[in-house]
Structures are given as structure tokens and as C-alpha cells.
Image (tube, rainbow, N blue to C red; front, side, top):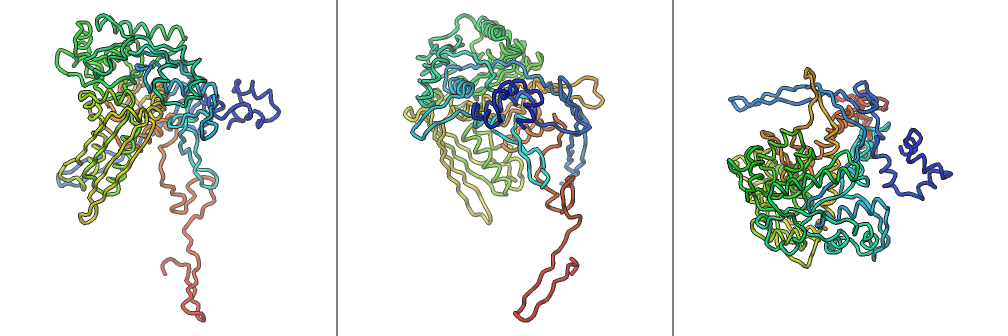
Length: 585
């Protein structure tokens, strides 16, 4: 794919490859991630179908969306009716210049994701006691994930990189800026975070020390009192003035870096929940008036969200607080701007959304889930305050609800499992979070099954790839439109990007939309949506060509009907009985 692409118009690779006698020599000069970087802004997968048109500016696909409408009858039976909706997808292929602005740029996540991008961009290597290490984007589905494209000539499944299905922004091309209540430059903040190997930090320092966060909004009532010592880089004035300053910062960044678009993401401290009440924030008008009147109950994260929306920038909430009060959602819908949240799903909760899905799907009934965490980074310090912990507890506790509700046989009484979440601050462990879980389930004939697991992880090294995926996929969504048959105008996504639920603990969804937390359903949603954009059907794992022996895949050499081989039964050494081929025997 690389050779084919570079010979058919990838000027960047052509220019470099021309210096070398063979492609192998070229690979000695650059690493695989650099090649992937050059290819990611184009697509190496091309679908040959009358339903797909690869135009100069866009990929257009004709798609049949198949669903099943179900009615529950009065006698308790079900009536299912298959339905098909025809629609046309259009995806702009020109990848724009994108800026990523992080609220909390100087925190563990902000410094780690910035350092990771720089290390990959400049192909840094560093030495540890385990030998030489190279940068990567492991943990990112867009950069390190693959998808099954289809079957090869021998029936084998062909997997391709996720980012080769359709043109996407590459992380190395992201411009980075942001805000933080701490004024440390990113080199000092990276050292304070104690996440990355020191030998790598030394290489990164000249790049990181040039980046200093912009002053941020500090409202002591919304975060823990123990954060006051860090707050030396804060905006002053009314909330209206602070919101206007954030808007100016976004415009300044966009202009100075000559960007096509900016995406803003909150990765700062968890806030307490804000009140929601009429007159304060239940409509866009109320919220804008509340900011103008300097209402105390308007949180910093909500001010950032409003500023981003008014600047036409997608806003993503990576923490568990209720940033998206009704007034924010209404404003986003009025302005036609995307929002997504809440709370990065990186470790314990991601594992939980897999394990509970497995248990319930297997007909096993989880009745008690107890989750304990301790960590020592600034996130853990902030969460040691009760109000901030309560925000996190809510986002972690609802993750099993849809899986429980999917099985009325196990949960006929409607009672959910007992679910307890504990988080403790232990400074010594720093960013190396410990998570311990106990799952008790009821099994066959009233038996009991207990699963206990322990997970040790670098918290920011798991969260940083999610930040990249959220920004990359959100930007992609801005380039996609869908037009249903009979409609005069194409549609965009609804303002709430629920397609990003795979990456978030407490997915924000449009009103009336079912919340899906099961991890593999969430991933399949992203994968199948991108397949629709290039005219491919949803992926399935039926593999009928291997189950029924029919040539359902063109070109495969499969038998047209079942063949039963001759079997010889040896009842004794001297007597042999041949079994006839006829299946009726």
C-alpha cells in the first residue's frame, strides 16, 4: 500500500524516496509512524462499487440503513418488522489545519499528550534500564487500532489501520495551545507530573519550555481547596469579561497559527456539580444572562463551553462534572456547534464496561460490584474533596445500567446490582493508579461466582490517547453530511456527538436517545459509521462462507453443497463397514 500510494501522487514520500536506491533503504531512514503520518491524510482503502464516488473534494456513498422495528403486543409477544432507509453520505476529503486547545494544559494529561505528540513528531528515542525505547500512539484507536475490511482470496479476514479507511488529521499535525491556573511552562509542569522517563524529558525540554499556558478561570468554590497553591495564572474580572477573554484567546490562536478550525477540550480539575434551576441555566438565554450578571453558580467549565460554542468550536468535556447544563445544550443546537462528554473512559470503567457486558451476555447475573481506586497525582488530590468525588462517583456508577436493562430474565424485578465506588489519594504512587474490583454474580442453581481483579496503570498515559481520538474523530464528524431520500437538504450530526461514547464514561446523548455503555457496541458504532461513509455494509462475524459451504464470496473456491466424507468403522480387526455418503442414512 505504501509503494502504491507513493507512486501515485504522494509528493512527500516521492520526494524522500527519490534519494534512495530501494524502498528498504528508505525505511532505514524513517520509521513506520512517519510513513503512516504521510498516508493518514489520504485514504489507502478504495471501495470499488457503483454506490461510491471518489470525487476531487469528497467521497460520496449510497447507503442502505437496515433496522428492525419492534412492537410489544398486549399478550406479551413481539412483532418485528425489518426496515430499510436509503441515504447518501458525503465526506469532505481535504484534511484541515487543526488546533487543539486544552483547558488544563499544564496538568498531567496536558503535558503528557503534548510531550507524546512532540516525541512522535521528532522521532525521539530514549534509553531506560530495559533498553532503547521509541515513541508510539498505543492506546489510540485511530492511530493504533485496526478494523476488519473484508475477506481475502482464501477467506482470511483482511485488517487495515483504522485511519486508512478515510482521511483523518494526524496527531503530529495538531497545533497545541490552552489554559491552566498554574503558570508553569510545560517543561517544568512535565517534570512536576513525573509521568515520562527522565531521559525523554531532557530531550523534550527545549520544545516544552517554549509553551506556557494562557491564564485560566479560577472559581475556588468549584474545585477542591487544596488547588489554591497552584492558582497563580488566573483571569480576573467578571464572568462575562472572562468569557470574552477566552473567546479572544481562541481567535488569537487560530489567527497566529493560520488554522482552519480549533477544537477545545477540558482536561482540567473535576468540578463539583452545578445547580440546575429555572432562571439560571435551563435555557441558552438564561445562561447567557447569568454569565452577564456574574452569577456564582455558573462553573468555569460551562463558561469555557459557552465561549467555544460562540466561536464555532467543538467543545469536549473530559471530566465528570455537569458542564453541559440545559442552556449549553440549547446554545450548541442554536449555533450548530458540536459538544461531547463526559469524563475520559480509560481504565477501571472501560474494563467494567467489558466485563459486565460479558457476564450479562452469558446469562450470569452480577449482583454486587465494588470498585476501589487510589492514586497520587493532582487529579487524585482534587478528588479527595467530597463534592468533587461525588461528580466522579456519579460518572463511574452509571456505566452498567444499559447492560443490566438489556436482560429482563436476570433482572426481572428491575433491581440493579449494588455498586460502590471508592477513590483515595495516596501521594506516593503519583500517576500510577491502582484499581481493585470485586464482582459477585449469581449463577446456575443459586450458586455464587466472585471475580476479583487488580489493575495498575499510568493514568495520564491511558488518558492522553483518548484526547487525541476525541479531537481527531470530532474533526472528522465536522466533514460528514448525510442526506435521506426525499429530503431537500443534507443533515449534519446532531450537536451532541454521542458517536464518541466509546471514549467517555458518562456519554452525553440527545434527549430521548438510549445511552449505550457496552464497550464493543460503542466501538462498532464508530467503525460501522466510517464504513458507511465509504459505502461498505456494517461488519459482522457470521462468516457464512465457512458455515454453510456456499460460495458467498466471489472468487472463493467453496463447495456448492455439503459433502459427507466416507467413514470406515472398525468394529473389530476383521470386519469393516463402509458408511454411505447419503446424509439420510
